[in-house]
Amino acid sequence: MTKLAFEAWQLEQLAHLAVSDPARVERALAAVWEAQPDLLRDVVLWAVDRREIDHERACEILNIDAAELEKRLESLRSSTKTWEQYIEIEAESGTARMSDNHVPVWEVILEYRKVGSVGDLCETFPSLSKGALAAALRYAETHPKEIQDKIAAYESYVTRRQAVIRSEAS
Image 1 (tube, rainbow, N blue to C red):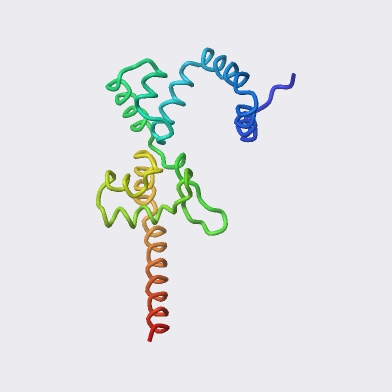
Image 2: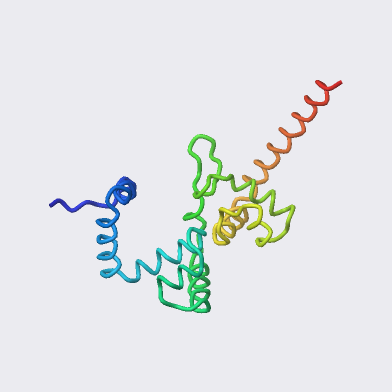
């Protein structure tokens, strides 16, 4: 059998196979987790950080208590120094977007300026983890002109649109 390098289609096809033959995929994953327990730990921690599973389920999978989970999550988040894993740059427009849900970073920053805390941002963007939101803030710190230009363009658009609406109403 030919050894395959990782390609995204492999995961997509495993997801499809999990629907038609879940027991087969469970056996394959059990073999992976047994061979690579640190991979399981990392996958679970990232799933918690991205709010794909809750803390209780993560503790159950990793066989640890809530305090240990929090410790490991903090370690994971503090070791994540780059924004690249959370943010992608859209080729056509050059707009920085969150990888998970494609929200433009400038929108996150605009909201942050209104609410003032990452905790409040979590309520506004519940699909984004604290790590992702922190990455957006780090990106904005290192690309302030880009973010300010995007916000200014948006605010200019809103002002023009409001003027059109007012003129149509009168």
